[in-house]
Length: 145
Figure 1 (spheres, helix red, strand yellow):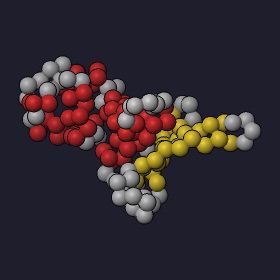
Figure 2 (cartoon, one colour):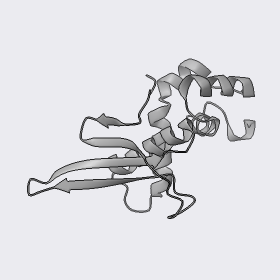
Figure 3 (spheres, helix red, strand yellow):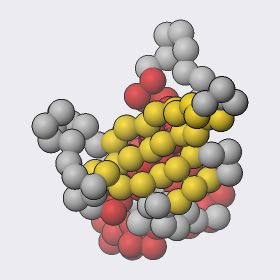
Figure 4 (cartoon, helix red, strand yellow):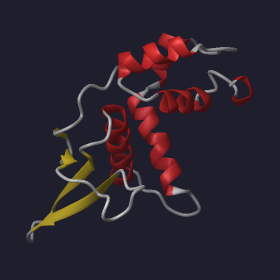
């Protein structure tokens, strides 16, 4: 399964995903997106909202939206680092294990820049996220990079 265009999408369960019409620069230069839960009236209808920077490249937008979706869907508590958990969720959401193993194999000693570039073009996911996911799935060891 590959994830297509997630911008301006609505997932089952009431999560709306969209581009932010402006920038977040006035808030924080490191701010790539945000998510929120919104309740409507006495019925407590809850809808999740996920926004990303409109001017960010597509691969950055996709990762930011998946990251923020992770914040909405996961119950991150205790000693877990919420940002790391959301990053891991985003990479798994955008690059499922089955896709990674099908395209790259279960184990690798080496991967070329050309392979990474082609995989990025095919999936719309950044090379950084692809490498992160390869390490997470132990397709390639940290020492091999």
